[in-house]
Amino acid sequence: MKNHLRSILIFSFLIIGCAALFAGGAKESDGTKVVVYTTKSFAADYGPGPKIAELFKAKTGKEVEYVICKEGVLNRVILEGKASTADVLIGIDNHLIEKARKAKVLKAYKPTAADKIDSAVLIADDWLLTPFDYGYFAFMFDTKAKIKKPSSLKELIEPAYAKKIVILDPSSSTTGLGLVSWTKAVFGDNYLDFWKALKPNIFAMAPKWSTGYGYFTAGEAPIAISYTSSLASHVLYDKTNRFQPLIFEEGHIIQIEGMGIAANAANTKGAKEFIDFMLTEEAQSLLPETQFMYPVIKGLALPASYKDVPKPAKVLRIPSEDQTESVNAVINVLQK
Image (cartoon, rainbow, N blue to C red):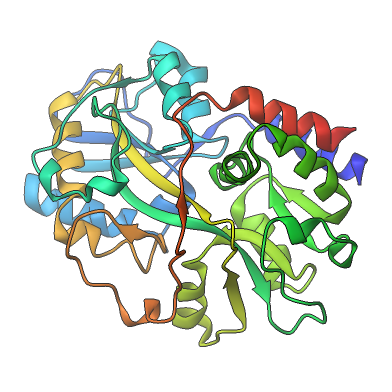
């Protein structure tokens, strides 16, 4: 197990580079193109990105160039420094805001439709980061598994779940980081005791969500960290409710995904327009069945695939702080 975890960690740290969906852009901008650093789940054909780019161009005349950052959007822009070509950063969440602030990779912008955003999901008072979707972390459970269904985080450390849980690398995955934050919210200063007890029950720590969730849906492990809204994806595409989110008595931590203007943006005007467009009903209505996350603007109806998706009775948040020390501490526990 230790060697398996270490090899995945080393692999995720060594991945450097972004894959551009279109030809790379120069640092100088003529204002006709907006360069957006983002995740594969957003920019790929199955994500909302292509349709958003199409609608944005129809409205503004500006092209969108997505750059998929395999090592993480924040990691990439920090690595590049002033050489970054990004105008907009999408994929920095509420648990990474302070790391982004310290790195000075963003500049504040309050969007024109800020009053349409649900106040419960605001990330930063200074608008360094604007929310565009949100969800609740949860462990997904295979109802065909021949084990009892856990009802709390505490139960996950029981011997019945030995080698049955998929988690994600918190240094490369925002979902993995979210689990670290969740354990801090529930266990406070004793969160590392939980991780020590959980270690024997970890089947794998994957570098990204798609890899980890793939283990789960392939039947290799019956429990995997994901989101409550993963159920909607199975209902929509697989026509099944076999895989169910576990609602835990301790509560569930919220992830709020943000977007912001890159500190060294060459096309600030275009970046502002893109952020404003992301808060329109046109763009927000695409998110529930592509990102499988909740839209942030108030009053937008959800599709039928969300009918049976449970919402936690208790929603957790932790104080905004740089999580690097906590991530390193968890990784050290898992490597021992």
